[in-house]
Length: 127
Image (cartoon, rainbow, N blue to C red):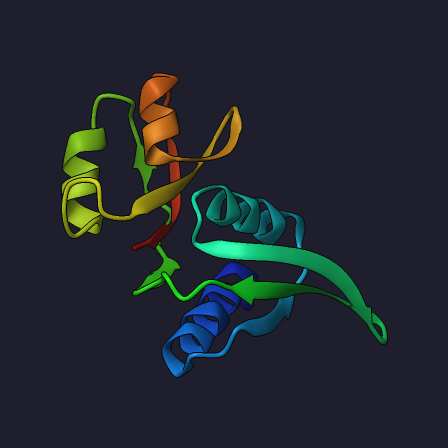
């Protein structure tokens, strides 16, 4: 089994390190929602869905602001009261980076989950 989200984030990170301004990643619903969160928080310029033969891909325009990103395995459940401890574990400093979480309300960041007073499962980190 392959983790498409891990492959997508690794592709984005390596293209950012090299200094390229575009990359393509496999298109899935989860990856699309994660890319939307990254775009809203100014980690990406834009992305669009393209068709390459029989594959659906996202063409991602990079901004050059990602230092590190990746998935969190296993996908740890976090209760709504445990956000401080979880942020200390995965984010390097206060107000630096974000956690991407799958909640009953959809894919959102740790700040949004704290504001909505909800818990969820950790998917990825970015800073």
